Picture 1: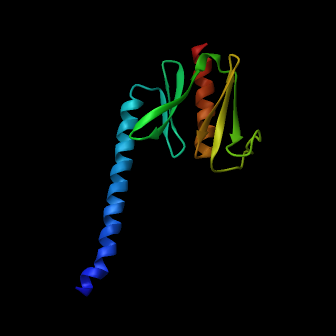
Picture 2: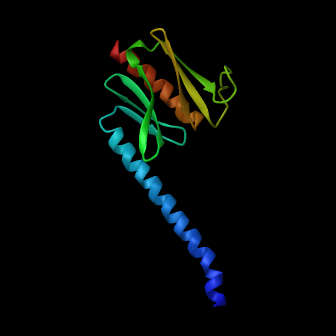
Amino acid sequence: MLHGLLWFPLLLVFVLLASLGWLERRRQNLFLAWSEGSELAKLDGCCAACVKDGQLTWSRFSAGKFEQQGRFEIKSLEVVELMALASGEAPLANESQGRCRLRLIGGGAQMDVPFSDADRARRWIDQLMSTARCDL
C-alpha cells in the first residue's frame, strides 16, 4: 500500500506530461494543415504566421483551432521594423534577444506580428523584404 502511494504522484505527472504532449502534437498538425502551400511559415509561442499568395497572415491557437489575428498584403510592404514586444514604440537593438514583434508598414496600414525569438524575426525581415521586392 505504501509503495502504491509513493508511485501515485509519478503516475499523475506522467499522465499530465502525456496529455500536454498530445495537445502540442495536435497544435503542430493543425499548423501543418493551415500553412500548407505557403512560401514562408512559422509557429512559436506567440502566434503562427505564413506567407501565401502575396498575403502575410497570422493567427493564434485557441480552443483547438487557429483564429486569424491579421492579414497584410506583401506587395504594399515598404518598411519592416523590429520592435520590443512590451515596451511601446521602442525599437529592438541588434544584440537583443527574446520576445519581440515585427512592425509592417505599407499601403497606409501598419500591423504588428509577434515573435518569441528575435533571431527568427530578423531572418523573417530579410525574407519578407525579398518577397516584397519579387512581387513588385
